[in-house]
Image (cartoon, rainbow, N blue to C red; front, side, top):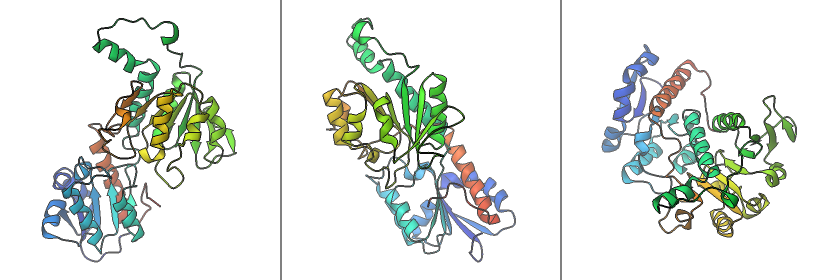
Length: 338
């Protein structure tokens, strides 16, 4: 339950106000409230909001490494808002410094984890299939007007029977796991806790913990990262981890760039030990133009776009409204960051 007196002041973009204002009023019912547009609040330096909804258009094309001035003004507004009690964000991860700072001040942060899980899982699958069928190579040969049959050493391996180790068993990892099982792949999930140090779930997915996950690396054909960025996962994939994979293994990263030692990744690709990679996230975003990752023929680079789809705005907005109802009723908020 909100501990505020008087109208509940809710901060959101003008676009969100236009889209969700009527639905929000229905959730609030007779409870007095005031909607404040981020644009007007930033212009007037108004810092009296109790709740904030940070939707996709607010962060725009900024990254957590390169923050545009308009978004920086929003961040400063949040930092200066002494009455702020709760912020709901459009992303599944809350590793931007602003959210860590707000958490340290006692502000509740909730995410939209699950809103784009199906989208991200599908994109990760697309990257895996493209690499498995050597589409980057075929695309380059198409541009060169070369007709080279996929025979001999060029012949792709069957996917059934190959092992995919998915790091992170949240909504994205679980959806991706079911898709890969449908292709006949063996799936290993790395998660915080399991029933036993190495166990098998009822759906046939093998479960290991972060403490024991290196045991499965020598059998891992596809190392797929779908985990949040935490103290445990930061720089999780080191040179020794990559070296433990069998020659020709592939990496798929739809988590966070900081989960991987990027220099070690470049070395593993240069040596040929790693067969290829599908990378949607990077240690610094945007990926610098001089990064060697751009030019590897066996690497697919996308601009942190795995979660983008035209239905996400609706799903995220509904998550905020559902949580607002919880806030008003005094029930636990969903996807709270601890």
